[in-house]
Image (cartoon, rainbow, N blue to C red; front, side, top):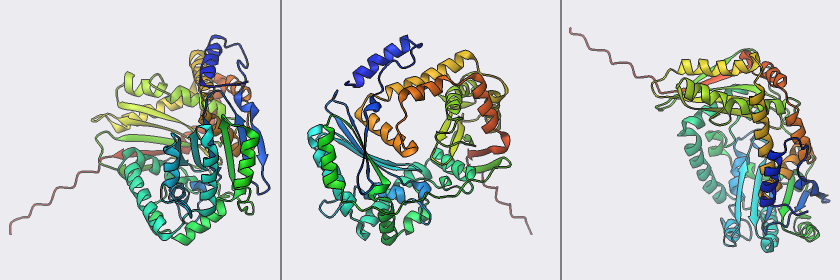
Length: 452
């Protein structure tokens, strides 16, 4: 059956009008075909002919959480992969896609590096050939490294060093995780990016960009057999490596609140806090998602109402439950109004989070939060890019593609008691880390010289 964005939106209306239905429409991802080449490359194909678009994504199982000696390499390679190769000049890969009306981009997380191209079907063979070219013949030279190093350092300056929110989040992660590699910023520490050499880059690429460390997903308007034949021809010769073990470091238990102050020229201070939370796939994940929705999703959330509307101490308040492959984080933060008390803002923020564990949420809040999560899952099926991303993420995280009705059922099963329980379990005072971003203290007045 063909499914497109218009179909999904129409079925969403049916879903909202008929909440008693357990599975109001067919899950488009159930048609995914899994193929594994002899070199270990995993290929996920999902035909959807409703729109003349196809999305091809390559998920490399490497992120900043895998970096041992130099940090920032995973993100640096996100840039290097567009630099050029033996038969393509700098940025020519992107130019060839964009001049055909396609979209191409990439991103790096603490667990994966993802490259995606969305294009019309007739250009899919070109996309596959271009991916094979850069995976086999990437330009890892001193000139390439020097250019992209400067790009990354400028990005770090813009996103982190000159941003109060960037400084806050970097400090919060490093404070919360003392040992786990998730403490390292995805973009890397400046000194590492400045010092890393060509030899280290080549070793990193050879280890992590091997066929058996990649998952390739294709979703959209194409013929599966034709595309698989092309992929076997173009990518079947990619090298494979011995299985790569992820960083084994585990975060030790936290036995007391941690605090840090970051000085930054900012008119409105920021107060942020975080707690250790479980990784992706944990039994408490759905209840924590619901708790996050109630606390911090939008202007009707508890945090926004309490800190912005009821007592106008903050300009905004937000947070969330962040699931990662090997650990998780539950965080909340508020942008303090200029002139308002940072300590009062922190006290109210803490009070709202503690209230979640002290008293059950109302049935109305619970139903609203669960419905928002359900709608988010359903609407997220409406494009080839979203479908390719979903099946790849599921495969990388779980080794299977969870049916949508399974995911909906676990959300619907969350009770008010579950939300209260996970709040009492995970959001505890001894496990809290707090960062305040404050203006630098005023310099002390110069001492007056006395008369002799």
